[in-house]
Image 1 (tube, rainbow over the protein chains, first blue to last red):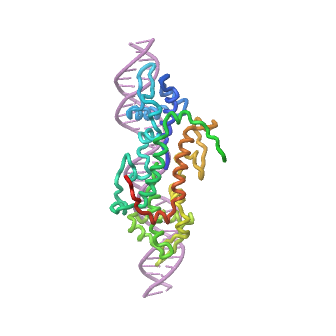
Image 2: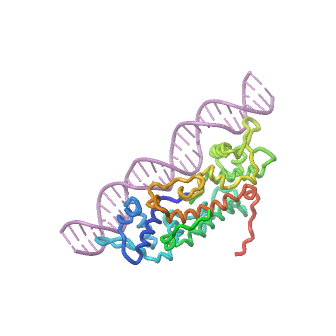
Image 3: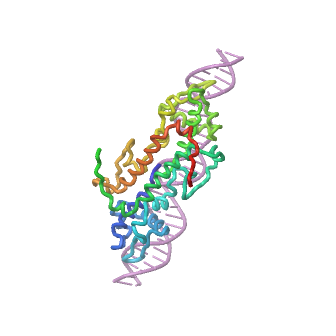
Length: 147
Length: 147
DNA sequence: CGATACTTGATTAACTCACTCGGCATTGAG
DNA sequence: CTCAATGCCGAGTGAGTTAATCAAGTATCG
């Protein structure tokens, strides 16, 4: 149930790009320095996000990356799916990348207990991450804890 | 965000043991056949569950495994933690196995956006899995869907 | 042109996952 | 007591993934 470094770095990079959204472009090394990410690794992450249509880039001097969509329209769920694949703990409960499980003894039966439990988990995760926007992410503040 | 085969097999094995709880012991090969699990792999899973105090076993002829605790008192969350480790997507939001993140630029600051988001996810997962018992798991039936 | 910065593809070291194997210890049957 | 069945335990292994790293491009600005 773990988030990869790739997704973690990707989210932190997008956080920086959100802060400068509509103001400026950011270069790899700027993002890398601000968020302590190895620049060559960051590069392929930004590229993946670009191919997915979240970013645009300019080459050459004064080049850099910028968000192409509004941070209100990008959710953490979208980003993690691009970088890490489906959110579902097992692929037979994924809605965006469903795959029938081959070896499961319940695969042919009308009902699978594991699907029931993991389906709930998948929905809970997706409910949070598909409604958590980059805007919210970038402006998050400590909640007042009562405990 | 994936569940390992180890946990999947472990849960399916415990499902069988729940069905025979208080009635009989089950041997490796019986569980393995009923659930299509490689028997040598199943062995180390059962052993881990035994060390964690969920199972007892008898050696020799007529040996086998049985649940040592009531299936009402065992949750899917416990099992997955034993076999896969913490539920939290990143270790700095784990409640059962917290670890400070070393390289994160927010580690020293009062607040980290990623912790906020992933903390929510961790709580949602734990809320489900720590309240889902083996009894429920073993008796789960298809819900009537309205869509 | 030449410095800067993004693009692309290849490569890699370390690690994890999902098993697999061999040998030992314990138990019950004959 | 011996033998066979079964669980116990540690080590090993091949495939795949993760997290980078590197080298050789191509576009852009001054």
